[in-house]
Image 1 (cartoon, helix red, strand yellow):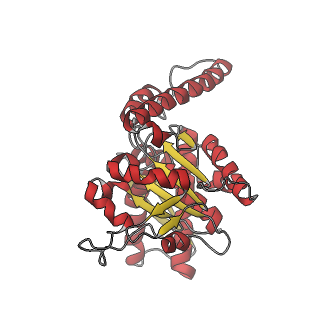
Image 2 (cartoon, rainbow, N blue to C red; image 1 turned 135 degrees about the vertical axis):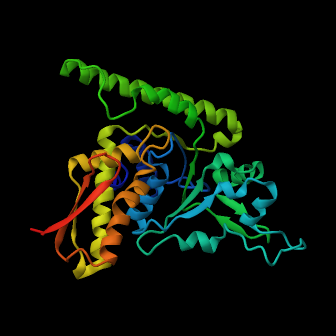
Image 3 (tube, rainbow, N blue to C red; image 1 turned 90 degrees about the vertical axis):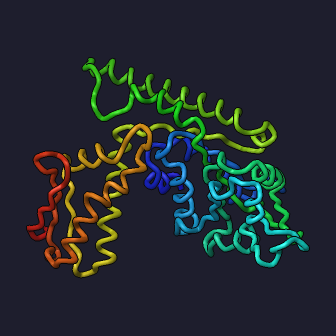
Length: 338
């Protein structure tokens, strides 16, 4: 499981290692009774893999990233909107029309034949109305949610993830002097390696301090005490970003092979093109979040135009190169694939 997750979530080994034991305890039948399997609050800068971790777990456990019961807390910022999660009680206007989102049927639907564990994600929990946070107290502590019609939902076989961008601006200010693909002043190799390790530990500790302080300012002690682990995701370095880009390129190739079949071709992305994509698709504020959109804009859209015009022969290599001005990528279709 650790190896499969590491292939999908880049640059966050400590967070993955912290989550896996809770799943193993459940698989061994040793999870505490009357509580969710695990409750995790994922913190850190945007674009570092928090939501991707949840999707990757669903892929490993169930075979699909869609096997997640996801609640976008941005949709529940007003107190009255929380009723959509549990449904209106009998006798209230709209009782029959308001279908609750968090039902036992929907919770069981994200399980699979290969695993009876459900994954629940409350995304951007800091945006939720106070009544939603109070509603979650019973779920996080007793694994039980009472709906408007007085039925209950059992979360004992659930992993519950809360993601948050609390403290993101402060984290960006902490990271800005150290972020970037450019190298700093040249130092001897040995001292540079030691400095990099020490600097990484120092930055990780600073991010954790900022994140935890922001959480304590936002949430009540009783809410925080029901969370098993607060995991602070670290800013992605150049090596991690390059691996993420590699995953994006491989995913693109698999998409072409799957959709085009015998008409498929090979996409070639050399080093200077990768540097172009990383420069346009990564930043302090957004991490690797923009990388997929950058790939879509500079790679996928030009490819789609070539395919639609019938200008790419099957089993050939299509190469992407930055133009002379460095503003876009030129597409060079041509030679047969080896």
